[in-house]
Length: 596
Image 1 (cartoon, helix red, strand yellow):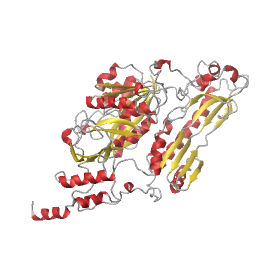
Image 2 (cartoon, rainbow, N blue to C red):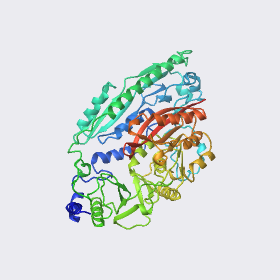
Image 3 (spheres, rainbow, N blue to C red):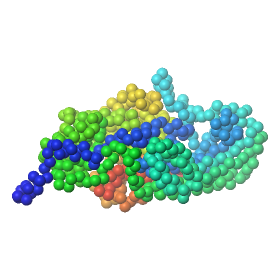
Image 4 (cartoon, rainbow, N blue to C red):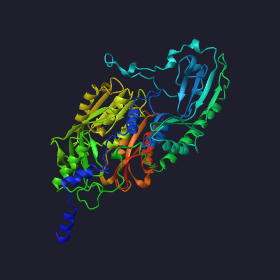
C-alpha cells in the first residue's frame, strides 16, 4: 500500500466503543418484529384464523388487501370482493328465518344450473355452481377422531340444517352485495389519505371508529347492489326462460365491482410514503433515513436478517460494508447487535453467495463473529406463533418472505388440498397446516437436511398451543425427493392449490437469460391441479421494467396450459422481494378456469 492508502485507513478505523455507540444510535436498523403498539396489533390481527364463511380472502380482493397490508400505515380487518346469492326469509342475516344458498364470489357461468330452483329445494344441487365451501370448523379434527378418513368430511353448511318445510310458502330472492373493506389506520392523517384515494372509485367511504392516538377504522363499500324476488311464495319462478337475463344482471355488477377494486388498487400502489407520526412510532428501530458516517470502513450494517436467535449479516451488500479481515471491529458489531436485541444469541456473516440445488452457502460461507460458536448452526424460527427448525448453513430460508407466506395463507379456503413444492425447511407448509382449515397439505423437498428440518417442525406443530386448527400435524405430509420424479406419481386433478416457489436457475433465469423459466416444473404440476378452479402460486424472476404485468411469465404459463388443454386466468401478480439490482422475485397467482 502507498502512504496515502495507509493514512486513509488509519483515519477511517473505529474503536470498539465508537461502533457500540453507533449501533445504539437512532439510525441503527434491523429486520425484526417492531415493538410499536400498532405494528404488534397488525401482526396479531393478520395472524388470526379467518372466521369468514369461506375461510379465505376472496380471489378478487387479494390485490387490494396485499397492497394495503404491505404498507406500515394500514392493515385490513375484513373484506369481501362482492358476492351474489339466493335467500329465503326476511333478508336480515341475524334472524333465524334467514336462509341463503348458492353464494358465489365469481361470475355465473351456467345460468340454467344456477337459477334452477327445483334443485335448491330438493337439496340435489345446493351449490348450483357457486362456492362449494364447507362450513367453519369442519376440519377441526379432535385428537380422538383425527384418524378418520377425510372422505367422510362432506358438505356441512347451514343449508343442510334447514328442512324443506321451513322454505315452503316463502319467496326466493336474488341478492348482490358489493365490495366492502374495513381498514385499521395508524393515524387520523393516514385514514384521511386512504379515504381520499378510495372516493373516486367508491361513493360510500367513512371513518367508523376512532380513538385518540389508538385506533382509526375506515369502512369502504360499493354501490353495485341488487335485491329482487325470483319466485312467488308457492315456488313459481318469475323469470322462467329468462335465466340469461338474470345472469347478465349479476355478472355486470361483478365486473363493475372488480373494475372499481382494480382502480382503487392502482391508486393505492402509487401512493407516496406518508410522514411518520411521532406518537405512533416511538421506537428507534424505524428511523433509518440518515446515512452512516461516510468515513467508516467497518460501519454497522444498515440491515440484516433475524432467523430465530441468529442475526445474519449479508456481506457484499453495498449498505452492509463489512471488512472481513477486521475481526475486532466485526466482533464489536456483533456484541452491539446482541446488546440491542436480547433475543439474539449469535451474530454471523454470510460471506458467499447461495449455490447448488440446495440454494445454501455451506459451512464455509458462514462466519460467526459474536455469540455462541455453534456447529452446525441450527435455530428455531417463529412466525405468527408457528415454529420451524432452520439449519442456517445447509438450507435456504428467508425471514423476509414472512409477509408473502401470510398472503398465501389468507387465500387457502376451507377444505382445500394444498401441494407445496420446493418446501425447504417447511415454513410455508407448516403455516398452511397450522393456520388454515386445509384438509390436506403435501410438501416436497429435495434437500435431505431441509426435509429433516421440516419433519422436526411437524413434530413441534403437534405440541404448539398457538396452532389455530387442531390436528394440523396430522394433515401435513412431507415427501423427500425430486419434484420432477414425485409429481408424475401423484393422483391427477387432486389438488385445489399448488405453491411453487421454484429456485433461481442462475444467470440463465430472468428477462436476459436463455433458460426455460422453470417450464419443466410447470409441465408436471399442471396435471395434478384440479382443471376447473385449481389455483397455483407460481414464482418467477423478472426485471423491474416487467412489473407489474410480468407478461413474459404470464405467457409462459399460458403456453404450458395450452399444451395440456387448460384455460387459465391471472388472479394477481405480487413482487415479493429483490434478488439483485433491478431483478425481482415475483409470484403470479393463476387459476385454471376450464378444460377443453
